[in-house]
Amino acid sequence: MGRFATTALLYEQFRPPYPPVFFREVAERLVLEKSDALIDLGTGPAPLALGFAEYVGRVVAVDPEPSMLQAAREAVKRAGRDVMLVQSRAEDLPEDIGRFDVVSIGRALHWFDESALVPLFERLLAPSGVVAVCASSSATDGRNTWLEEYTAARRAWSDQRLWSQSRSGKRGHRELSSLLHPTFDAAEMIRVETTNEIGVADLAQRMLTYSSSSPAALGDKVESMLRDVEARLMPFSRHGVVTEIVVSTAQIARRR
Image (cartoon, rainbow, N blue to C red; front, side, top):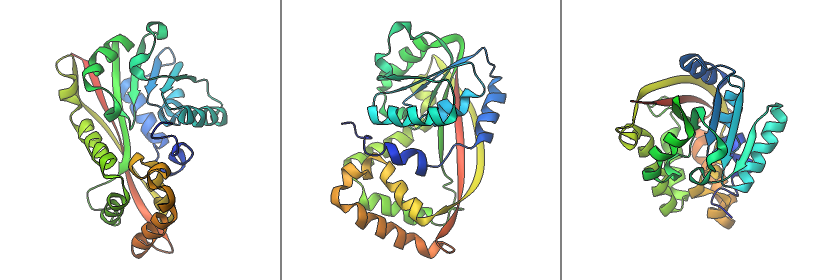
């Protein structure tokens, strides 16, 4: 069982969403067309694959975790989209998978072998193709007044080894240019900001979507964690609901 096996059913519901305006903005900036093909690596429940499916012709979604692929399969069925699902590590994809105009990666970049990224992208991308490394998360500039307490709770309840890996993953997103240098230039950033209302109970459930504080990591401490997080966040809420400012980004890497 993979580290995300127990998070699959929660991931789509409780992680900060990619809003429709984000996909529209990226599609316009990249001038995506129905003749284009996109492959989404580490797709999870396929939010990126489904979001971009409206703007391209062929979509392939890849994930090594069977439970995530099952969640993706159900999401694809609900959306009525034509998305090819492949259970595989990205590095193990067969040569005949084809070439793509866009390679997208969401919250999975830090799970890849850094030394394999450039060869992988060179193999998957069409000559004029681009890499889009996407993320959607709570704004960290102080406007989400509850976030500091939430992060403290997350750290307190996390498996510290896995917590450290997740922190490394955030650094990896910032260092994409150095990871792909000198073959790709990753200087372009697309940024979309949205505001949502979310219950503190849902934010507590979000804690279970991270590998470091998943049901598998917490075991019989899940209910205690949920009660603690809700109690920590309630003073920041109005009737149990807080405002969340979400920043969705796509860092675009192009061949030099």
